[in-house]
Image 1 (cartoon, rainbow, N blue to C red):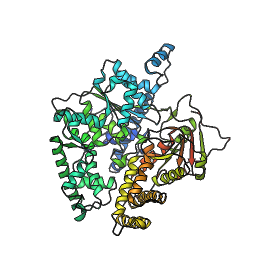
Image 2: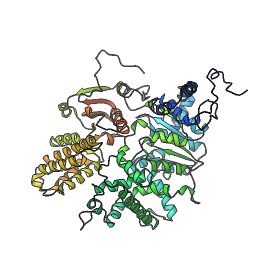
Image 3: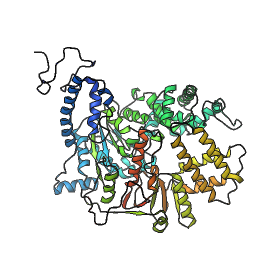
Image 4: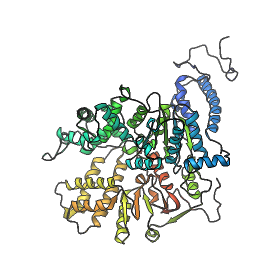
Length: 637
């Protein structure tokens, strides 16, 4: 008998005409193959990853009522399965015996959480790849150690395991925690990629090739595309191809980081996504970018020079996993995976090859580096590309209960929970003028914008309080802005305030009519206010170089008695007492803001709220915080 014998769909009208979709269902569920991705997206929305109907509404609009009835029934059937799967992914609290507790304590120095034990169990008994969906303060580094120990006890040698972290200092810190036996296994992705490039080129020592961050700047200068000594204006600006020479160099980086070919369409898309506003001839920019990259690749092949992005890009471009000498790792652990860019994800996949397994540890709500080239959907892409099992890591060991309660109000979709013995902690709302009275050594002050932090830091220093703003690179960007101001026609340091006003007017004219005009103007205002505050604090300065020297003392990558930090720089920091300065700036919103930008602005607020181990001071009156009445009971977890 032809037809559908399934009693759940037997009542539907049977049509004699051929279905309108090209791919007939081949699985147990009566659902067309073309809708599997959309339905999976809907199912993922149940754990807060996306809006339920955003991904499928356009497809549903094209269906007939009969087709909609079949899809509805398929989704209902799938939802039952999804609920069962979701329940199975949340591990129950294990009932450990005294001997098991003693064994875990001897092995790790503590008893792992139920989530960490579930991850260890997946490593031993599971298959394929995994993605650890963690929250702030959940012990991601500790979980990596548990994973590494578990793998070692299963019979793998450290040399068969690769642990990739962000930043050289993080790698060094992890080696101290793991022991010297893991020294060769733990590195940054850049270092891992560099090792592959050296192997391919037959380079024995890192000192045998120049690694220089100015590589592509020098290539562009040699081609007379951008200014160099003796040639104040490059071809790109002279021929009105681009408005800012540094933006061309940024595009050279972003084409590689996004792992794309430099076509006109790609350049236009990158410029739109990363808000590079003065791309006037995208076709010519694409051609010059391709030419610079070709020269850069030749310099690498000839063992002349690499830059840091080459270390990620070239192993991917050259497909070094297909080289005869290549040997994949049996297990690859990737930390901070929510901030991978497209090229880094490809490199991680290369390291594992076709036979190795990957465990990516990520907090998708701390994805805040999209502006710098990171893939804002890195976590979702890892899960999709590798068909990874999602493993929750939901206990926050850093924050007190009251702080987590606030996070649950501001970010209700985040499954964060306090540790069982978490203290209550305090949240205090204060005025801006109270900061100087309450601040003490060891405190951190976090804000969204640079200028308010610079002004406050200068004020604290003037009162004899040792303070710095975290991030030498922020200082470097302000110094570059000073150089641009000094290039204005008729510039004179004696009339520096007038020069700032002229520079603001010039940039405002450039931004006029752009989709992201409001955002660009807001960022410009922040930078220029910071520069103005620095200038006003240095009445003895005789020129730009004096201001640059002061900037070098004001910004630091090290912590000081009082450390002021933007939210971006605060990621990874923690302290007993945290001040959120100008909280009304979070989350920032502006006209024509892209969806990924708003999402990352909300993530920045989450980062700020999860830095404190004891006391949180909210310096202002944001709309996302209302002090609870004294008699109000604290929510129990």
